[in-house]
Length: 318
Image (cartoon, rainbow, N blue to C red; front, side):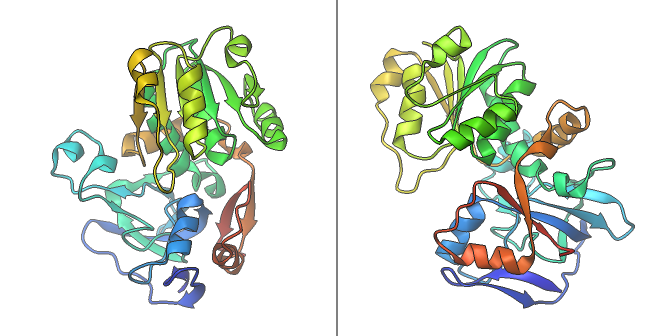
């Protein structure tokens, strides 16, 4: 089968590899679409200790034709975190596309209990359920109540998904973004308000935010949110930051803030993502994206300067 494979740093190529064979409890899936995200770009820049097929955002069909999406965070199933339903916190977690071969290939094997039938949903959109699930996981940790003012920092693809996740919880959401074109896109995609970092978020929302999700990396976006949310508010540090991130603990201490973080999602979040999309509560089909072939995706991942604004979705039929 054809697959995109990462070996050394920026060594990304389309290769022919054997079709995988399911083990007990696994199913074989013909991949139709696979998303390319920032994690895949970081993996391509770093390289891999062993040759790896990336791709943790994907959808396809079982051998009987059933359309499915695949949840990519696989826990051990026995630790405290897994027993509580938090596979993404498992110390022995295996991530499809990072720790085992992923969906940027014609075929994938995955545990049957991490495969969800997605009847009625276009497979190209179903490939985006995984990042939406991550944002729903973040919003759930903030325990947002109906009518809360909230802010998302960053209006890239994850920022838009975080905005929709908070709105699905009943929040009124402003999006803060430095780039004018992204602010405009956020407004078009349903933000209740948009602003640049110099704007008055409390004025736009009728009060300081009670919750924030920071999807932009670096010290400044997180610091901006910590300083502008309401006293006692909850802030989710969603973005990873290379080299770490220094913050002023006094801001958290004296303003009674809760600083929360998470990566990945649970099968509950993934299933809820599908349910919200099918109910029309999240317009996932509107997320800006572009289609690419395996070869085009490989060329983009090889380029360290490539960082497209739109989500790239590999169309395995191209």
